Length: 296
Image (cartoon, rainbow, N blue to C red; front, side):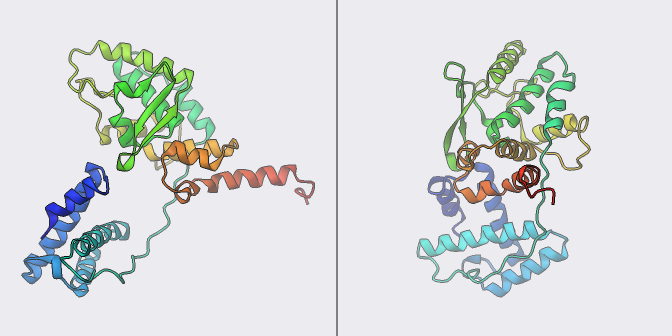
């Protein structure tokens, strides 16, 4: 198996994040383990499609959802495509594979009122964690950055002079996001509390735990759930819904789709257009209200 080479290719040529690479590696290893334990297949490099189908059936029987199965198959497909690229294999056994049907993922963004309540009505503790949490929610909403981008944000990425944030996105693509005056104030307040920590281990990262380590993904997720539970009846709350909310609110206020695309760090407009359905609903209201024939 050419797994080491495949991982190097994903990191160096495709510029994938460590998190994404690990997911690919785990999926390929899982399939390899399935082949070995069930069919004594030592190497998956020349495996036939029928064996992949058996794995899909096995995953389904173990109650793995279709979305997760599709992701695993996508990882395998990428591995076999890599084998073709380096001349190890002539045929990708998954070339004609059709993804399993999945339910459409519906994410409902927070309303402007919910955002106003979480940012203005909640009494955050007047200590390091309270000030950090308020800033964290504020930054996710006013910049639309991803959870991983927030965690990796460095002290040097926050430029108070030029009022910008430098963000390292997917595939190591760098983008610059404007900073609001309110954001600067909140950062300054947080930094004064941050300086008072007994110990700072991850000095370069701006967002830290009270023990001085950089934040981790599950903590960010838990914080969003904790605070939004107080102001929203939504069952599903997550950092990504704040990103969705950022895009929706900008579009509802008339922001250009291309500008929102740049702010979000999307490589194509198709990704940004996912967020336009709410804006279209808003436009329908305006259209019905403003057009002479709207009340008929």
